[in-house]
Amino acid sequence: MHESKLSRRTVLGSAVALGMPAIAGATIGPETESIFSRKDGRWLNAPRNWQVGAAGDLTLITDRATDFWRETHYGFTRDSGHFLGFPTGDAFTAQLRIRGNYAQLYDQAGIMVRIDERRWVKAGIELSDGRAMLSSVLTDGRSDWATGLYAGNAGDFWMRATVAKGVLRLQVSADGKTWPLVRLAPFPVAARYQVGPIACTPEREGLEVRFSDFRITAPLGKDLHDLS
Image (cartoon, rainbow, N blue to C red):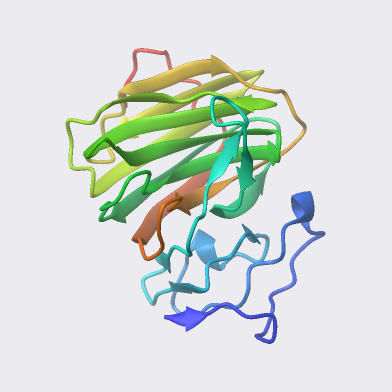
């Protein structure tokens, strides 16, 4: 993997959203058609090691003591996790596949929807008390944390987020076809959001995660119990 440095060629897209630095140029084959190669992707806390491979997948290795959290219980605020955000309008559905090997407390990877440092959600797998948990953290000024045991393969799963009209719907999938509900919650209304993959290791460094099958569409608008 290459290291992300300021001296590398930087791909300049549209105006930088939310103050995030532009995604630096990754090695991509000319035949690749991948959202991760789009010029409007913005890193918040780019990891030292990351790459977009020939197949268009994003692989990264986490830096030390990276996390997203605001205040609740612990009293601290951390906004140091790795997040690659892509712009959306005021309503959308986004989904992606996440593959990783979680080994230490709070190792985590998944999807994030973000307005700014005070308003965001992250959802995916997080290691807690020796178990791979299906985890979501919804933050509107302060963070909450909801977890549950995940019955599928935590090393290879999909997450989907739909935002529309002040409502957030999170879904998980073991195969990219069937999408049980994870969470339904109010979410701040905004004219635009950032959405994309996240990975954090609050207690260490070195978690390798592969992201693929990422797409952003208009909100699906399906019935709550339609799991397709």
